[in-house]
Image 1: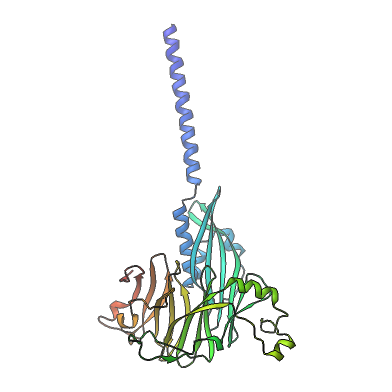
Image 2 (image 1 turned 180 degrees about the vertical axis):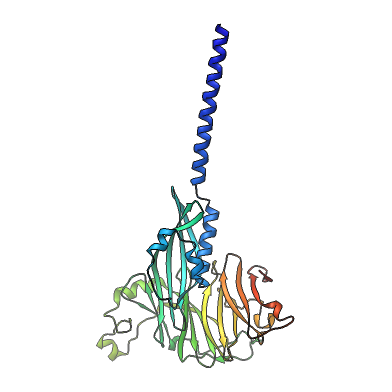
Length: 365
């Protein structure tokens, strides 16, 4: 009798342990399902930022939660386009992942650039990962009124002069002049497109005339601080008014640009936009020739040297256009687009391609 009682007690204990174990396993599974997969969330942020770059706004909307979509009002499309981005940091919260992303945007056909910080919240729903919230904080603005380029730090009212047209080099070698034999006059009628690095320490400028000139300028942050403490009233165009005494003495505002690197003089062309790679080791220029042909060039940001790939030679640009898409961590992605009806071997070139930034090999995507 005692033996039977012990057996019954043992069975009951086993059942209790099994039930508790199953409950704990179920709870652990539920908790595990709630956890955010950082890689999956990061891939969603990549898709979101690339969708903005490619102006695929319908595709971007599909990445938001239903609540986010409902909150969206009716706004006209902007001519300020995201050109590049870099994920800076990610924070793991209880029910979400918060990504800090730096993004560079430029205005089409206008010398305006903004550097913004996106804080993107990714949550997990039944149908997958979605973007639950996006907060954007301005970091810097770069703009030009024609003969000077200025920069604004965050929400400051005052701006600083980066460079004026008179401070540009008077001559430079085009990168197509491989032997550096024929130095050319720098076209310096008016500033055209601008851009900025993700860390905000380098500003890209270009000029517009018969030819296009582009350069990278390193900013002296200490001069920016000093300038903000000394500058006076604001001018109508966002610059600071000089005092009457300064005008009489011929005193000019000191630019905060301290070093300039020539990138290129591109013959019979206009710069559409410029952007840094995610690691800031390379600078890409999207340009248009006078005959309408679109192409790209890529330079080393530290030296200004053009990489050993000439897209004008790699593709028949009399038949196709080269349109930049976006930088990822390892590649420069671009599209080959037809100029008209193509046949045969040229037709096979149309599509998406990538340039590896380590070995500079071009492959179809």
